[in-house]
Length: 85
Image (cartoon, rainbow, N blue to C red; front, side, top):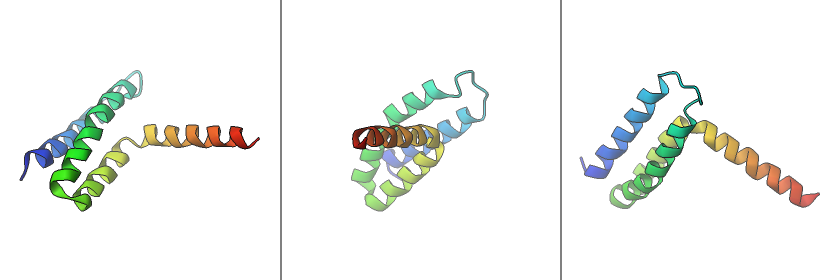
């Protein structure tokens, strides 16, 4: 198993473990850090392991960080509706 794949699996485990504990800010600060680490890690995994493994890691990360993605999609949709009005 390669180093990028091991780091990606550790990233997934860390995100799952931290999500089990309660947080006052609903884990938003941790999510920002995980996004900052996860995006370069996703590129590294995709570059070394190929696009199929990269897409699997992207799907796993998106399932863990679904609320930032949901808010991003809402924000993008709201901006687009303002432009058309």
